[in-house]
Image 1 (tube, helix red, strand yellow):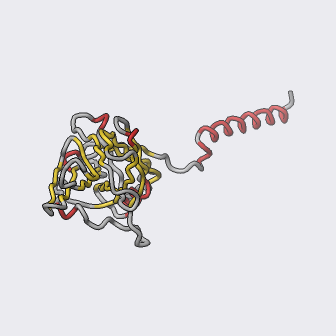
Image 2 (cartoon, one colour; image 1 turned 120 degrees about the horizontal axis):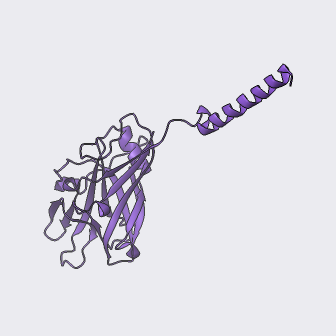
Image 3 (tube, one colour; image 1 turned 45 degrees about the horizontal axis):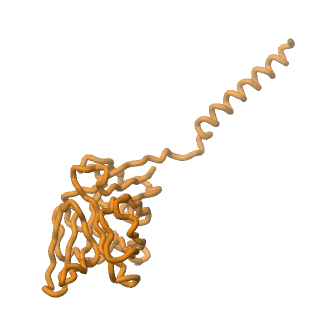
Length: 224
């Protein structure tokens, strides 16, 4: 076989190898790798606050095994509870950390539901808030949620269902996490409360046992 023909075969072979290499690495155009981090909530900083409308008083409970939000209609004073979750983003609780220069791709909070009472559908609001770690106070019950750059409130609305009792529920919090990241917050903190515009009834219990990681509130974040 002549030298020219051999050279053509060698070039074609080289092109084939390069094509396989480029295919394997995405051609260098796939962008930075997406990293997934899981962060369990800081149970001693989680809590709930109950407002008793008859006594006009607040009861703050920080670090309980079950967090409550909604209205307890079995109590003659029918107190309203609001629940608070804290996820450290700086790795200070021993879980993953989110770099301050990271770009958030997605974020999901998973909670394990202990009970859903007094209604089959519980319209729920989740506000992005800030409160003192291990220092929840009555003022946090009705504190102003954080706002997006356009001035709108940073929250999301969704429903808990009676069938959620005993199961895990995943809540998309991507926009809230992106706002927390934009602000450079060391903790991702949210407040759960009833959406009274939709329905003023319902009571939800969320599992928050410190020694049972499988049912603890979990924040999963993807970023690059």
